[in-house]
Structures are given as C-alpha cells and as structure tokens.
Image (cartoon, rainbow, N blue to C red; front, side, top):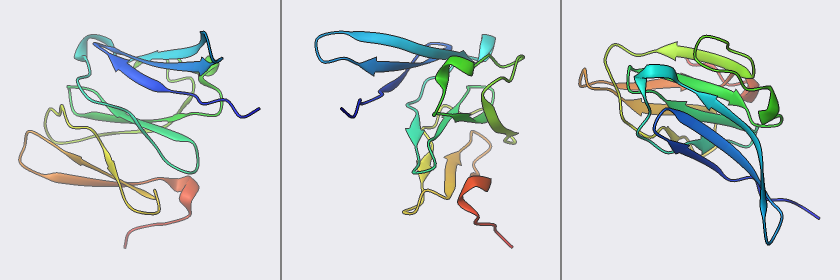
Length: 123
C-alpha cells in the first residue's frame, strides 16, 4: 500500500505525517527557529522538501526520512540551504521538472536555486 506523506508548516516548524487512513503518525519535524515560516512546503520528484524561513533562508530537506530532520542550527536531514538577500515569506515554486526552486524575497528579487539531485545546473 502506498502511503501519502503530507507536509505542512505551522509557525516555526515543518511537519511530515504518514497517512494511515483513519489516523496519522508524525514522521518528523524541522524547526526554522525564531525566524518563523509563513509559507507552504513544496516537494520535487527527488523527494526534496523545500521551505523558506522568514529571515530569507531556503532549506531543502530529505523527504525520504523525515525522522532525521533537526532544526536551523542542527542541520540533520538538510540536503542544502541558502540565504537570500532579504527576508521572505514566499512559498517556493518549482520548475516543471522540479530541478529549480524559485523564491521571491523582500529585497524585490526572485531567486532561483538548483537542486543538485536533479543533475541540472545553471550557467
């Protein structure tokens, strides 16, 4: 049976749940710390979970094993992280093939981050 793993954010934390039909189990959570997070996570085909924190940091987490997730100072389960030039409350948007995460920032710029798992790089 394939299980659906929903991800959702609440204040400063991202949660991963296992849907058991009539109940759910918490598989893990990731805290962005005091920065908070007011956006929705997105997931690509490489099972990367992307979320931004209000301080302008984007995180790419390993969605295959949310039990390994740590927090913004203990980067267990974080595949990569990058900082934008300004704060951000934007939900990342993915390119059609999921290889690029686009995120808007309060510095009036749009940032593009490539996921190394996709094998795609920007020149």
